Image (tube, rainbow, N blue to C red; front, side, top):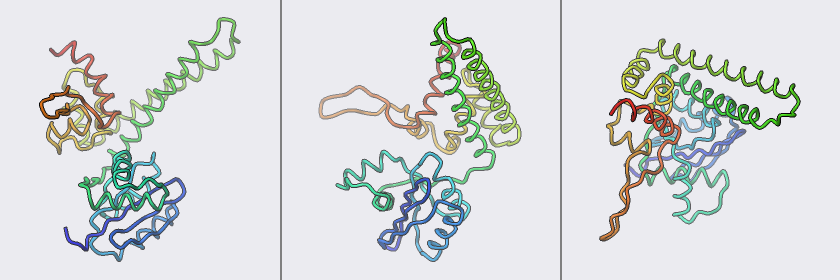
Length: 272
């Protein structure tokens, strides 16, 4: 890596995003709109030797910037927010503003190894949206069922009717999402091929396969040890001197790990 390599940290919020370019120590701010992203791309276009753009997941607010950078074939890494905060603490940087966060992201990129985000196919992006909606609906269904269960016997019957209507609507929409998942798989050979391999295993059905396709796009490009560590199911050593501690799992992608746990329960029963 040459000394002319540049790293661009991008701290993104709902309405705007701040950038910091290292080692130039240049900063700028842009609106998180289509026009703002276009100005940002024009701002960084003349720069030479950009090694990495670095940003954190921000609940979807980063999507516009990320898609624009990937469309422009720029090297982008999406880094874990907790690790970045731990890095900032280790560097003694306790203050937190948008401009400081952009600097920390750029500094993290030039000191730590990061993985590039690979461009996703339209079908992959559609699957991610469908899985997110399925999880939202499932959460709301649980909430409505809890409300129905807690209704007192003397409660107004109309309240129960409203809850039942709402619950039926949510159940119908969730089923529609499952049908859309099926259609998404049928329309894309790459996704359907991966899903078929996963569904050949006991315990993994359509929904679990879709959860894995959405949350683990690296499937097929990493070996089993790397995938296990990425998910957070690889036992980690806890040894010091003569002490041999209990191996435990930690970190990783919790939504994927949750889906695998649900799949493991029937697999234990039916696949010795």
